[in-house]
Image (cartoon, rainbow, N blue to C red; front, side, top):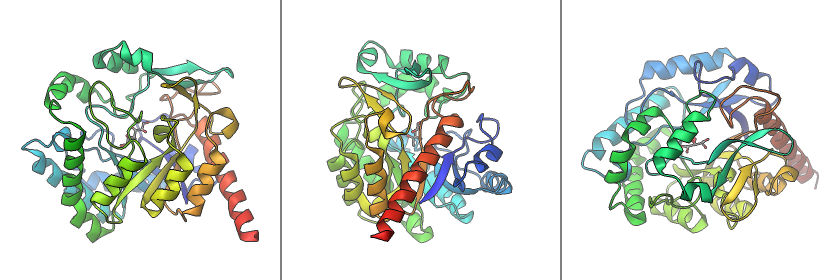
Length: 357
Ligand code: DNO
């Protein structure tokens, strides 16, 4: 595995490349061109400049999170091919710079959802939290507003203002898009980009839906073992893979994370490793990465990744906000650095133990 940290780019992130470089074992970043709206081509010169900046700091661009998919593709509207062509051009430009792991998601209208971005933990840290009762009592617009107002002034990924402007129209446009239709639109998209991905060795890593169930009547299709297996089989080629995100799939306590990792095996192209604490069904909050701080067995998760021979990028995910840091909720330096350290500690112990047997 290659240990990485997600980085939003100069001007968007409170964390610098120089700080990331000082976390032992972290050799690369997962980044994106944050200001390019979904559907537009990523210009080659912008990719080159971003890569140059990362490499000047002694790090590597290990992958992109995310090249976002335009809603026309998810809806399957008549103009989708134009957006697919743009997507292919972005992939080609990335491949020219040898950037070949691409994370994306296929969630309608919005991306991940939490109902509170600054929930206090008993230790005084704050975390992102979810409570189904809050979601039930709010409209999507209210949720957008509450996320915007509690993000410390940062633009949260997946909640960019250009989405806010279109939310009503988007809900209209998704009418008639049920689970089956969304799935077929994903397959159409994957088949269309397949030749480009295979030509350049690009690994597409779909991100699971977070939380792993439908919201506001919108379908969600990357939520559990059977559905993911169906997706992997529908376009059964190595390029079509997964971002294994423990924090997203783990929102549903019935998802057996280590078993899923073993089942998906080499179709996992990218790993997000973090911990959640579950309370009642549909009520959870994010925790420190340490097993004892939450509900997941992080040792079993890392061991399962190790056992599949995972060689791709891995990153700690949403951290707690600790030690007075002023940062984008979930994406501060301190707790993610602790997470990176911990995951590497588990990996080292598993590796030595395996080799000595
Ligand atoms: C949130 C992230 C998501 C993720 C996208 C991938 O913190 O986990 O925004 O990056 O869903 O496309």
